[in-house]
Image 1 (cartoon, rainbow, N blue to C red):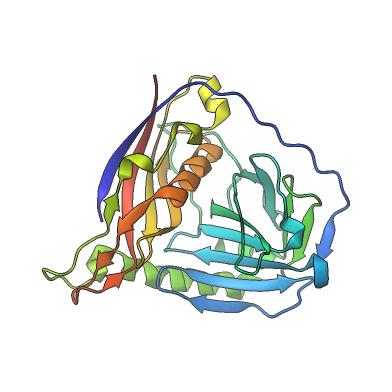
Image 2 (image 1 turned 30 degrees about the vertical axis):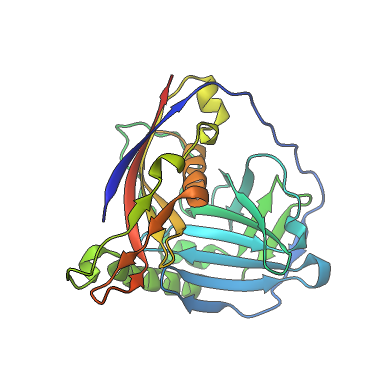
Length: 288
């Protein structure tokens, strides 16, 4: 697993503010059973909630042994999101503020995705001396999570009635542990054909505008160590922050930039075939 360092110089930016969301909450009950799937680069549970114009599909993806998820919402209620961040909450766990990527599905439905979401930890400031928190959710927390809420950035707050979740989170955890073995270099047979993913045009992956406004205004520099999941087509499909000296929204901004622009020659197995794999790197933002 390669580890490359990327340095980005930043200036000072203005601010962007999100309008508050005060509309009545859209409460959605399940309209399908949970679907549990294993892919070459991720593990996924998905379910559809509500019907007609209010229908929303939820994907929860896990890309390794750590209980860290990519959360995707698909449906008309997610159209035209505004502002730089959204507030989300699983059950009675602390509400967190996350950056997001907006897009459209192949069927033209609105898509909103958040990367690197954890369930057990509140939003917090970090420093270089702080010990990284334990992210395990445990059976009791998983069993207690029965709803998912999203507000801000969307026209109307949304609450999904998830139902019992312990079995679904157990599937993701077991699948993620198996996947981590397969995607790590020790999980591939060595030969002269086998190789890790090779980064392409790494200097274009992050831009000055990716740095969060509030950190640039405070003249604060940032550094993080990350791990990307790279698909067999050479696209980054997941971002996991291994270590960071800044708040969560800094991690989000860096991951979103990497997921948008990072490109690779994919890893190869012992037979020379393209396979999914991990790639690790370091990003440093310095004032100029």
